Length: 307
Image (cartoon, rainbow, N blue to C red; front, side, top):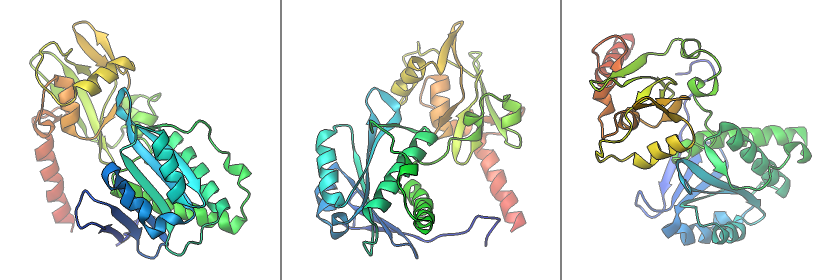
């Protein structure tokens, strides 16, 4: 079934070693692109693959040192991805994941690869989800490809944007509207979204919305200061939010100066309440006692009725 421009796609994820943490290969049915994904322990196996000795692009990804909330990424291209990715990996200590992107029929030229490299860097910078390790941003207008080739490479990128999140890389995914349109009033940029809130006995109050699988705590929301010393998994993240000015002092609490996107309601609740938290229970539909978990169940019920 299709809706507007949305349609289903078949992505094949092949576990080369037969284990979920080993070398993986991702493809889309009908697309010649081939995406190999490794961690540091399986990197040698990636470089030994036949696909890696082809023209293509590659990505090295890992945590940004000193910034737990962000990833750091390096993007490159080469006539032989195998050799260049090994050289780049040796020069960079931050990476934990390596991705080699080539084609099954080896039909990418050097010009194609350089165009894809430039566009990937451009899109990653625009998405703002990772810090680019690349010292310069190539100019796509200088990659003078024939018009038909440009169209083909843009389609290649569109398929890549579908595959990368499936293997755990969100570097090309646009930020939620609630974050990118922060200059607009929250009521305007969250129109149509269900709002959730925490109203804690400590007095802390926070409001959030869910958009495209991300949980965004809105500006003006409050958070406990962290003086309880309660163990939690998001201490480093909270410290970074304070360091970058997203969380600022507000009386005896902290306040979100900007909206911030979390990967889950529990991550958001942990930062707000300064303790390990089940966000599915802590967050409630604004103005009601319905928990996020019960709200989700209600959505499933509505879906069954519509079907």
